[in-house]
Image (cartoon, rainbow, N blue to C red; front, side, top):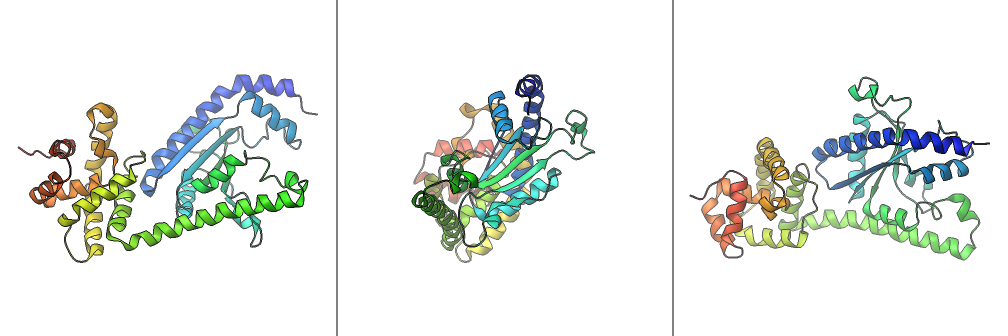
Length: 325
């Protein structure tokens, strides 16, 4: 029998240290996933006292010491196609057990809760922080999921719909409805992936995808996509005619070469705060503007002024160290 009161007292005392560990893991994830070049969101937290007690009451096979998820972390991304890249990066960053892909567990004829789980995620033994957070004591249960998978998990409260024991007790019609709903979420998830690839057929969308890959290595703020498309469409007369593939390749090279400069620009922006930072700095198209300020400043400024205030362009230019004087 689990001694609940003892567990409660221990967790009250130890939880702040585990909370600090969760913050360390979250910050390392944020820093290390930026080079992947995709939008992501990281959440990590230690269990509340009530949550830990309830977990021990339901997981009879565990003791306070063996409970696997005293600290939980989650990385949420947009597209299924990016899951593998994110998981690969995490596995290099930390020690962990083999990833468990819930989709593979379901097989080919079932639908339900989807996510990639990495259990026992812990610091490497030679990590400097391991002295404060020993790997044999401090670990995280980490999930990587898409926005669609996150929706399913949140709507099911992470319990009933993905809990096999609960599902078996349901009325057959309810079980079918649960399966149908899970299937709809998975279809939507897959379709978002396909749409993202198919949209690249247009020059504007292809250019935006290239810009986003670089933008998310510098900033995590979600941009206004409607504004991105509008601005890119307006700037197309400045983009060299002909092979958009050749231009995006050249743009990739330019942004890669300027990455160090760009990191300093965004670091300064974070220090200044939003009142002193151009709004466009947190739009991926600002990277194209930076490129065109370097290669076709006068033409770009003329086209810009036909659609947007010149003062906004000047603020962007100043942020990148470009003067109009």
